[in-house]
Picture (tube, helix red, strand yellow):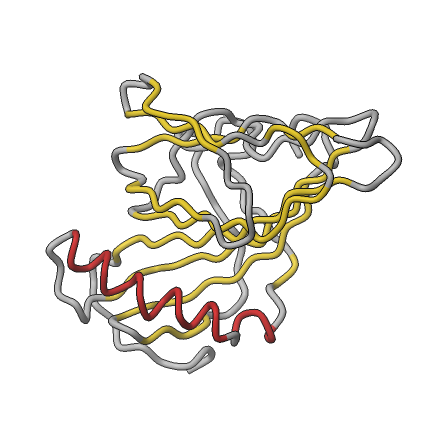
Length: 198
């Protein structure tokens, strides 16, 4: 991390989604401008790819089949329009000597249209409170994703989000917070879905 921390593990995958269909695209870097990520922006960041078993899982298929049409409807778009979608597996670790920062950049936007944050697990951690605010940076709410499956859907164009640092609850044991983040950004030009490499 640009702040010198070594508390984040991450895997990444990119998809193109349309209607209830989605295809994985060739592995590529994640990029955000400094406008959205003042800490780690303006550089191409390469992460290990999401494993095939995860990318092909029934859970991810259900996420795309349910949420892509929903976002198209909410935005008043053609249901068959194409979306650029990125998937991130995050593990934020904490230790007795280092707190874990899920969002070291603070309250932020991701530079996409829609965001899903799905909690996978919380092990031996305190804190990690999700905070949301408007584009005027006025706070709108605070809540904790506590149990596996707890989730939040965000309109990234209107809502900023962040998570407070996590701390070790019991120092003798490992501590981490795992989340799945999936983002959708509408492609201005509709493309026909095709398998990677074609």
